[in-house]
Image (cartoon, rainbow, N blue to C red):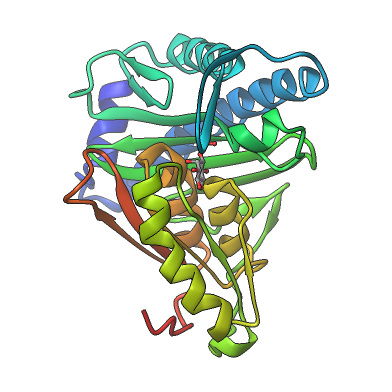
Length: 278
Ligand code: LIP
């Protein structure tokens, strides 16, 4: 089955109509299987985070603008078990570490708790973010907010869903009427490079928001709550799942590797019609 899925994802389409119908059926069965397993892992991890939201938390490290919690690691271990039990050949690339052969065509990109500082300060705005990449391309993405019980799910070639309902990005083109989310990242250098962007946007947009979870920012752009989200200095696990949600909802994602920081990116995610004049 796995090898058959790989050939499907590589797009080797059979010639005859009959085989093509079988091809489509099995292609969508493959994708639905990936999505179901990802949703189950996100929901189970989300429940663990909600159960512990009001309990004492163990801090594993604290810096000026960032905090790391033991529950980040516990949650990623739970997600890893649930995903790799189903797909033992796959690899996982997560905020709390990597598992398996990263040259595998299938790589899960995981942020077990996005919005860790919010979580530590009992601010109920955080989520679980899980994406699947096939040969480098994101093909499946889920983001789960356990406090609002909101599950965003997306897959390549299909309209995305929020708790089962399809959604689209907003169609607001005028920046003066827009709500823009800006991330400041977590190091002094990155805060210095993000602050001027915020200063500009505050005067140009109707409102700016600093929410503290890149993955939820992406989900909010995808379903039209925000018109755009910008941040410099984020990691792939912060935005991978949101990437496919925004694009399949009709938006645009511009993700650029930073030359000055390894494995860090600058992102502009938007509804695709707004001109941010950046
Ligand atoms: C957070 C991001 C947020 C960024 C924070 C931090 P974490 O991720 O979601 O956009 O501004 O600095 O990177 O650390 O909570 O997974």
